[in-house]
Image (tube, rainbow, N blue to C red; front, top):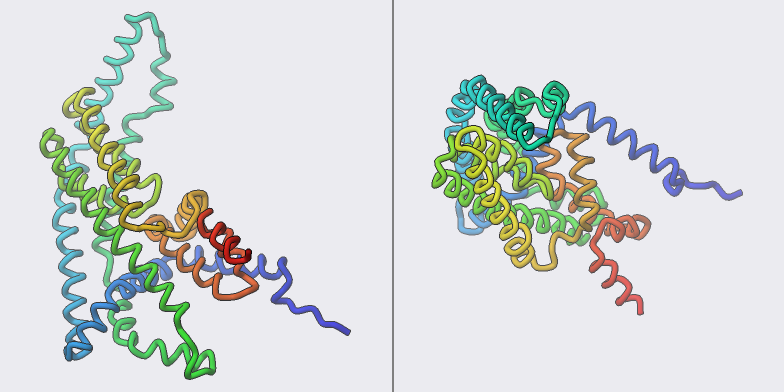
Length: 349
């Protein structure tokens, strides 16, 4: 009598997937700092191993990397904390200015024979809600930058154990000579993506800061940091970063300045997202455009804003891991780009 393996049952696999996702979402308070620490460690492990090859003791190397990460974190906090406080304090003034602009716009439309009901329009586009949402988002950003004690603590322990991970994996797989190429491919792919994305995001942030500063828009440093961080979110991150800055330019300097600010965001994001990143990344991130968008929604729902920031590297890691097993390779191909599928077809000819 043939016994059916539960592992091959699609319904059992789907049920296990749902349980794991539900567990991740329920434990997101603990999972999010751990994931951040893991990605920080993936970025910092190569320079740690390089320092060890140069004869620098492991503890000293970890200390150097830890001080570097803390210095970057403190720089970001210093740049945005005072601006966030000032912006939140000016919210009532900005709200009043936006109400006046809305009223003037309605009057102008009325003079042109276009009558709109003010109350219904205000319900749909509420200036107070828009600026309140911006303030809450910025305060949440400040909270993520400052509440990092557990992340740093986990980061230190992961780095201290990094050199022993290959042997532990070989022990788990019960083969001291097993090839860990697949695991190295995951870390290398994530490292490459995060490295390139960090450089392009930094360029985006600097360009936005200069553009808004030349215009005279309030808090250009804060908007530059905001653009830098949100550029990690694919597809919609640059749009989210542009909305509050353009809105502030409208309130502070008028419609023409808002249009110029919007053009600046458009130019920078077209150059970075459509020209520089594809050229530097070569074959790209190996994920289809639809999967990138769906992963953004999925990881954002499971892990919140941090899940959105790390949606692409998380999905890249899952895709590479799935490609390592024959039974799940079809899922890896499904997540991949059309070029990957074409290469698979070519190899089977």
